[in-house]
Image (cartoon, rainbow, N blue to C red; front, side, top):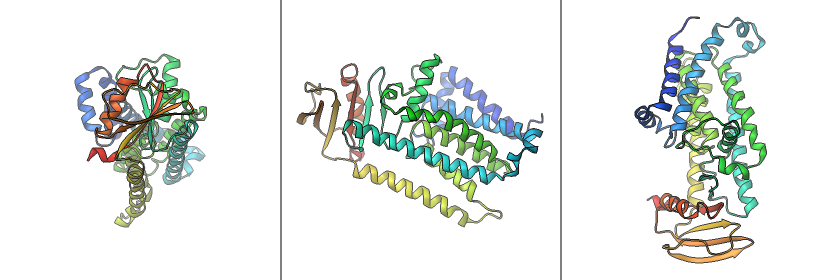
Length: 332
């Protein structure tokens, strides 16, 4: 098999992915590189990104050299046919993830504008802004198969018991999107293939870790739509539809954060707990118990992220699940 430059890039990326698992200094470098488009990144996301993108570039070359694919009916369709399916399926899956987030909050009778925290066996969080619903399904797979995962990589397993089993559909969607993405490489230039491999990788990562409004998802979808929309010869007008869609998505994300925030208090809702919630040291404004839930209003004189992290230490081992309201204004 002729190894072209894209295959060589793919091989290098997979080697980096493997080395990142074992070399701590390389992990730090990769985190800095992937930080802008993986939303803060983590060792797990960096490893998956390099492996996904590398494998896509390599397998694309194998398919290109395969007589089976060349002579099959699959190859009769153009690349944009499959890319359109990728975009539709990805968006559908993202929306399903949002519906699961809403369903969980409806089940426990809390606002959708909250961060869901599960503390057992480890701390895991999820919200409509940054969802870990499908990630928790991956946690089930890792737990059941006994795959070794470093302690600093979070699998979201704590959320799994509260997520509808239908979320297991991610195990079908993920490979289908991967394969459809490979078919969408047909008749692309090398530069377009690199962008497409990047976009497909970030879209898949965002699906599992972050959801529709996360950076990987927004960046991935934007790049997919650009590749789908560009014509030959290129015109700036080709970018209008992708840009409009992403701008609307960003506006919705910001509006959700603003509308769902309470600048005055943090409302902490502990499920299955009636009174005696330990928040000593905080300025507690009100506490009430309703239908097996203890709801505590705490003065929002602390940054939201700081407050959330502090509740982890207080609640772990004592309260299995709780919800914390948002305060986006605390970051300014």
